[in-house]
Length: 107
Image (cartoon, rainbow, N blue to C red):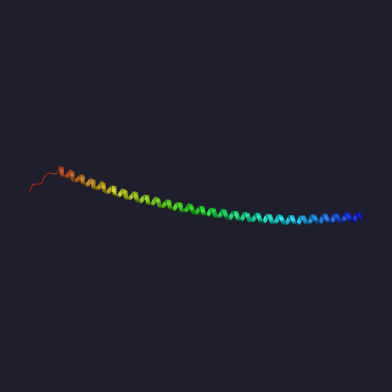
């Protein structure tokens, strides 16, 4: 009978350990699956953040290019006005010099 009790305890212990191993394996699989889902979620969030940052950089570049174009147009307009003023001043000076140095016409 003593051998029967020892054998029964040995079998019970083996079954308990087998049950623990199976439960441990299932928990490990669940943990791995959860970690994979977390990694996928983090990757998706990182990708979305990178897309948002790229869009912001593109928008900033577009605004910068528009500002440069506007500044160039303003500079061109200012240069044109300055050229017109210089031409008018040169014409005026030419007329004044001509008037001061030209012989008077007599009829």
